[in-house]
Image 1 (tube, rainbow over the protein chains, first blue to last red):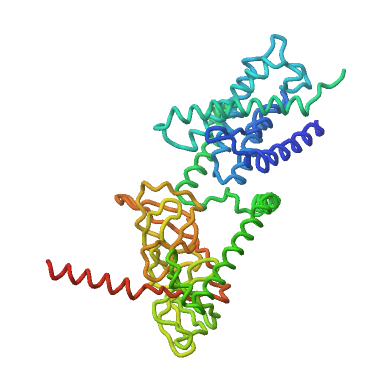
Image 2 (image 1 turned 135 degrees about the vertical axis):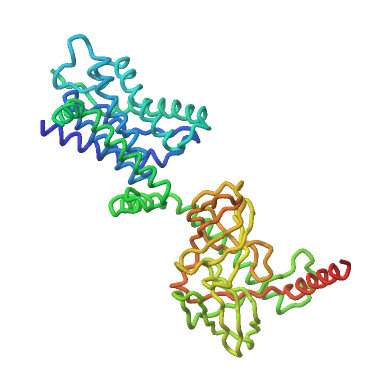
Length: 171
Length: 281
């Protein structure tokens, strides 16, 4: 349990670091801003209490805000995402429920399951983030396009990260 | 009351969400209304330090470019020095060169007295009429504009600093050339105000502001500063821009006094046309 907490804290720091120091400095064109750091919220363990999910989403969001001068936008998007998470997990749960001690990752539940689960969360996050950022609906379609393209890139990065860093535990 | 507490307890998740989301939205709105007033920004110790370290590392990647630029600039400056020597010593050379004629001459001077904290600030420089300094010459430094000569004695001159209520410098946004008057509002020696920039100009924080060509005293394209923030007052079609001055008035030691050789000619011509117009009307 404690082990898991420490692992998540390290993951928090690593993901924020990668996002702020590397990904934010890469320019992939006007429409594409991937946000890898949301991976932290996506792969919190299944048995994390709901309020911990919300609070840690808020924390990682506000940390991002401090680094990118966005004053609450990331936090709002992350809290929204954290709020969605339990519902989505319930929606996609296998009939016999999730195995204890597993994490919502590609390695445990397969690519199709993970893509639909993470896809919805990432899309929700980007939607809130980009619309709060422009704060009007007059540029609806260009913003929507940004949301979709950025979501795809974020998902790609997330899947690549999963394959690079997470091994299924041998049992 | 008991029921209400029970209700909230039962749906605590939703209320916690509302609370946090509400707080975030509050931060967003506050941040967009009062620039930089919010406490969630990158100027706090931790993130500022990390970001600065990151930029420091990043800058190493640009060192090669930077060196090339400096080398180019050095070469450019060197050629300028040589050519101006030629012009003063060998008159024939200037007479036969029809491609260029010199418009500005520079005299270096040392700042012997300066103030920055008053509403109207002045500098004193160690060059005067003996060195050919006249009234209304421009004063610049390697990092930007400084002011305008106001009074000259035999060996000294006083300069009306940019930090003066009566100084107005005609400046323009470098990237698209729209110009307006730059004034100092008397609060902070690091910032000045540029007004009358039309709202169709796409401003970004950090845009360069330089002196415009429509000035009798200042040469064109002398750095003034960068855009710090800008706002459009309701009902007006112009931006008012807060400019971070590139000159550090606290650190001035050596400056250049700039003489516009064609100033008198231009002025005479302009007053003559004004008079002609008056006669016709």
